[in-house]
Amino acid sequence: MFEGAYTAIVTPFTRDGQVDYPRFRDLIEFQIAGGVDGLVPVGTTGESPTLDFKEHEKVIEVAIETARRRVKIIAGTGANSTAEALELTRHAKDAGADGTLQVTPYYNKPNSLGLVRHFSAVADLGLPVVLYNVPGRSGKEIPLDVVVEMSRHPKVVAIKEAGGSADRVSQILTRCQLEVLSGDDGLTLPMMIIGAVGVISVASNVAPRPVADLVHHALAGRWTEARALHLKYYQLFTDLFLDTNPIPVKTALAMMGRIEESFRLPMCEMSEALKKKLAETLKVAGLI
Image (cartoon, rainbow, N blue to C red; front, side, top):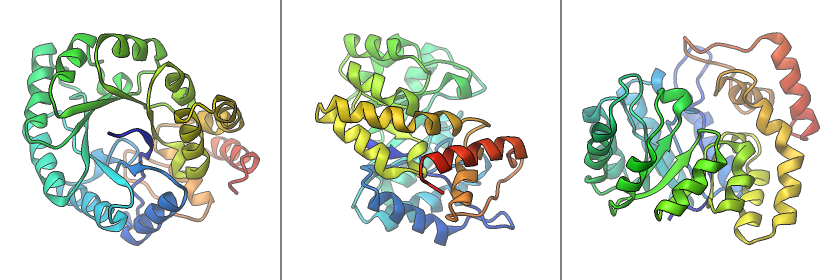
């Protein structure tokens, strides 16, 4: 259902810290022109923790309105409170999203039964669910038994794997039928060789065409072409994590003249040394 290249799109801010909706619309057009299959607004890369509820909902609405069904929209509507996740997901469904990305509830670290009940409550709303395994952020991995249990729900259709393990992808695919999307740009090709069907990408914010082409080559079995793109852009994939995401990718977009270099605390700018290294990588990749 969600195979392909999906951009975990940033939320641009104006210099005074407001959501920059004109720039956001421009970014969406840039992504669509670059050949991506979908967008994931208000995920980790979209700085969801620093958006209030109204902003969160409006960013999703603007993404859906601007995309005009040209690409799919998987709305980031997860939370560490089930009630909040339900409220955000209901809104996304009513707004016309194609799916919802549901992060593992963070900080409170629920047990397996709590995870099943949480994800099931969201899936019962009827919007297709992409589970989001990102232990580096949530502090807890979705146990494989929970993944298998949730795969039996007709509305749980995929999982974004951002735990850095291709082995875990193999374990999922041998134990249940569930689409796997890479959550790490540098592991997209290795995961797709195993059987993943695409990526939810940070790098495609700045390089939508190369990421989309890499994924589409892999889906078509053109492994030589996919490998060439993987190697060509691997340094970019790596250096977009020189600092906490999304600081480097927003800095890169600012260097490209696409957004302001603006964050909301506690997120802030990179050091000058890291900026210099990132700029060098962007130049080698032909992006600036």
